[in-house]
Image 1 (cartoon, rainbow over the protein chains, first blue to last red):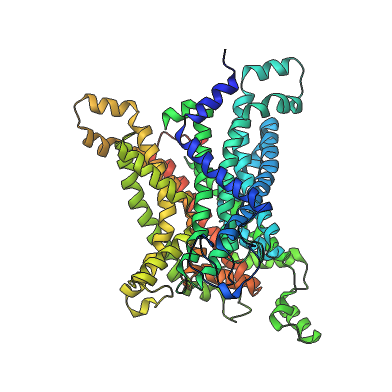
Image 2: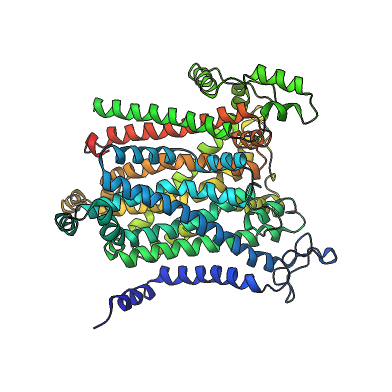
Length: 282
Length: 316
């Protein structure tokens, strides 16, 4: 008799996008972790005698306008992206899931109010409000992360409420109610465990979106401030040197695209594995 | 139907009101005294106070909100502190860039996405489908401002076919202006198109499973005729809804892409106004953008219900 976990992992490993996404995400995570203790060169230390050095074995991707090793900066940039992803998705999930569960348990006007508020957040051009928020609170990595997190709240709230409503209609919930369990206890013991897989899939997708949003804010100079390595800011700095060293505008973008692609593929794969009916339908 | 329309309209109005509150509050907590920012740090206290009186900054917050709301409703927009020009004039000049850019990107993405999506659906699970889906997956993962940089790199720096940025203005002929907007539009359209292509594909696939499609095939209609006459028409309904929802993303994207190509559009106006603490401009432009998005979604909602009679109001 094979355990459910074993079957789950075997299905995962047989899924092409899951494996591809997992590998790419693994590279992202690995470079962030390794860069905590080691990078080929110091990503912050300037060396003006070695500006714009072409790629070589010594400097895999060459050096930038300050003579810093680009490969090392990109490796450390992964830390920034992963931090942004984790923190903003946590903010979005914590508030969004709580609101969604609350709406679903209460129904009636509470649900209506929460959902209308979410619709409203949806209708707003998110990046514009993020820009305003960052401009208001002051530029910097933390404010950017909070702004991105706030805008993923309605995504999680909607998803949670929809999935939770479906579970509330199931018979085992009815049985739990008949047994005298309160709404709060049912939510924690029955609803949440049954919707967690949907939430994990969405979290992966939101992680990717957060990386994109942070890169956009940093590109506009509103996100991570120097000297923290950030892929978005690297691209912004590369703009003024596009005629001198065009490659500076290529590498950070590849890094962002690889990270986002990996997370998206991983999310797609997870969704298919968790809900094979959807996979067949798509 | 009229109940549905009334309900939708009410939601539309409430959303707009919410947008005004949010925009107003966001700028209310903006650190720094606008009067002091406008006059500079060396300005004497009396001058700052005089400007504060003139701008009405000392009045209670509720009073200022309702005064502003009254101005907006009667379409009396504010005056920019930095340009000393009415916001509406600043906006009018910039809309001549932002709106054509957004429309170009929308048309471009729709044409490419419909083509690719329908093609992929018609080759379901064959190499053609897999290729299109892989390309679109890649398209979704690429940040539009990076794509913009790559386009500049290829077409402006290497091939020298286009200028790397700037806008010649419509008065110097339609063609040069169109050329200046083409690369930005492509950068915007790629991401939108990739998302839309995926939606088109799954909408077409869903429709192809419908009974009436099987009936059409059973009565002897060719695959191609069924696709054009029965599948596409029905599949377009959800796709158009998504296009409406994407409009907000498109506008947001324009802000960044305009910055990359140094296009003097609405996006640049807002970004500059934010760094200048030009509250009147930021407030009114953000509100206009939000109103535009809310309005488009309202129209799409109504169109959706009009086009698809199966949609009972309570389902929407």
